Amino acid sequence: MKDLKTIILAAGKGTRMRSGLPKVLHPICGQAMIQYVLDLSRRVGSLKTYAVLGHKYQEVKAYLGKNAEIVLQKKLLGTADAVKYTERYLKNHKGHVLILCGDTPLLREETVKRLLRKHRASNAACTLLTAVVHEPFGYGRIIKGEHGEVLAVREEKDASDFERNIAEINVGVYCFKAPELFKALKLVKANPKKKEFYLTDIIEIFREQNLEVVAVEAEDAREGLGVNSREDLAFAESVHRGRILKRLMDAGVTIVAPQTTYIDSDVKIGQDTVIKPFTVIEQNVRIGKNCSIGPFARIRPGTRIADAVEIGNFTEVSRSRLDKRTVMKHFSFLGDARVGSSVNIGAGTVTANYDGQNKNVTQISSNAFIGSDSILVAPVRIGKGATTAAGAVVVKNTRVPDGGLVMGIPARIIKRKK
Ligand code: UD1
Ligand code: MG
Image (cartoon, rainbow, N blue to C red; front, side, top):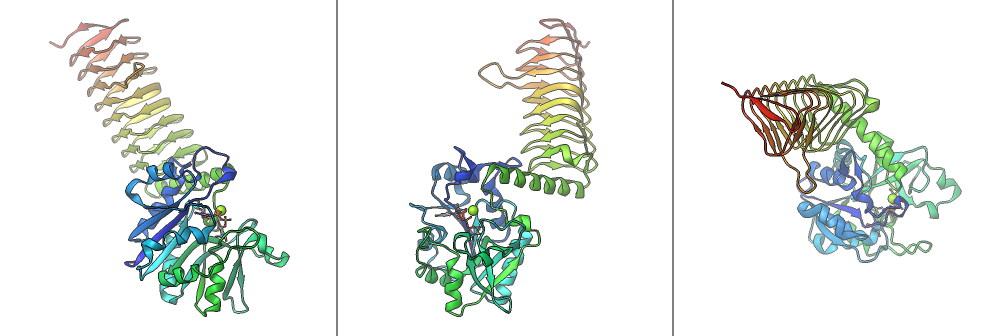
């Protein structure tokens, strides 16, 4: 949509999270909750995103950086009040405004696109997303007329017993014609019970003005989840994990045991790689084709693994690069390592990358053979085709020449290539 701008509401306190961290910054599969909504805004073709912040806004602002225009809501007087703060940026915007909440990380691109298509096609002043759920408690209920037309959204506190039984809820995602939205906002009065200004009151205001309101139902009711508690957070994590694993499997990756495999949101894995049970792969990791990872492997951020690499059980790899056909089959740790191709990392190998102050690099060149239980105290360089004997402690600043052999504690170079 060429004339679409987005508002993300994220000023709320998130009290029920019981957290020092702003709610929308809690990670889900390695990525802050608000990032999912931010990406969605961009992917549905929004020209610009405004994030309404309040509680602990500085932390959220620092996270968002230049990815959103920050609008500060001075007092948390409700969702209508929050949107009002964007008026000075959007008052001349003749197009449409998409409103999302920062705490709905399960919302999918297809669903928002469907909402936007319906909004356009129907020429409605407001199109809102609904979901039919088992537990409507706490959500605004959708009140419909005889012909299925949306009459109002009734908040929990204001709902009658009859209305409380309605299972169709307001997800909190709307597309508005911008000029109509800001005109109607002026008419919203504070809710007598909560003393808050409800954005949802606009639906009735539109109806009184004979402006059309259209509802689009989400196919997957989980999409409507607003994360309010740690339990919701864990649920959102499990749904996202399932989506990530499905995406990878659809792309030709074997996930032997999806129930025990934890892969973060932006991980890329090549075709025919096999991920074995109890494996954790964190944010910002790339793995090539035909690799075998796990069981019981932890691949940490910043790691790049080329094709046909084998990483076996009880292994950790952090901020490291492993080139083609390198093998590390048993309990080992690589941190800040640059490993060439066809290297053998013996069982029990440890890179001592941290000296208490700095993280240092271990360089292991192609075809090297690292004997079992070797300790490589970084910075250190193992030459091409060189060997470290079992149990060697290769001390800091050692440069093992190409084809060399080192042995002992501290390791001495006992053979050089002729
Ligand atoms: C809101 C809707 C409800 C819907 C539910 C979906 C209203 C009045 N009700 O209720 O119909 O079913 O979301 O989850 O809109 N926020 C601000 N400033 C404020 C208040 C809230 O930015 O002053 C933000 C929050 O950070 C949050 C979003 O708006 O991202 C929704 O606010 P919240 O307080 O969670 O509203 P609900 O009571 O859940
Ligand atoms: Mg909420």
